[in-house]
Length: 227
Image (tube, rainbow, N blue to C red):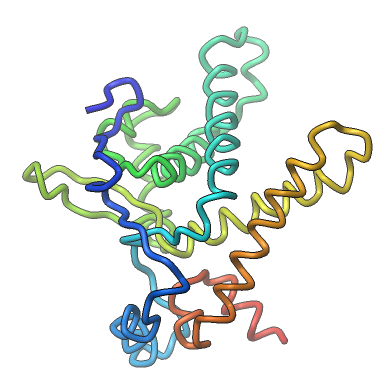
């Protein structure tokens, strides 16, 4: 167990997320149960936790992992080390910490234990539970039982949360690249954006439309309806 980060750590090959390739998988077969669910429900999307990661996303996710880790560290440094007067700017950072922490664990191939997550937050357990309940009800977080420990609740991001989080991060990198004409990091930012765009283009090519709706985000379905 990784006590420092309040998570259970698995070896990558045995962690909660296996690796698969967009170029070699039978997409219809892989998602047939999910597609059947959305067609039956009539909602146009469904909510579930990913069980694997696409190897084609590995390059840009290295950078997304670092950025997520940095943002979370910054929030916690301000909370733990800032003066009493400066902490007025912190606001309700619990929501942000939950979001970044769960995505950080996704990138690290880890799962998050409920009680350890709550204990790490800058708020009461009651307030933390309200935030988590809202996130679960909105389809952002998936609750599961830890197979190794009875009555131990763990959290994972839903496929919708992963896609919207990464869409937001890609937009951040794109804007940073466009706004920083003289930065020595521009080529690195462009590389990350290009890798993300390549993955999205490939995914959109190989995924049938019904599957794409089932495994991306609610935003994808909502934007489609606006067109």
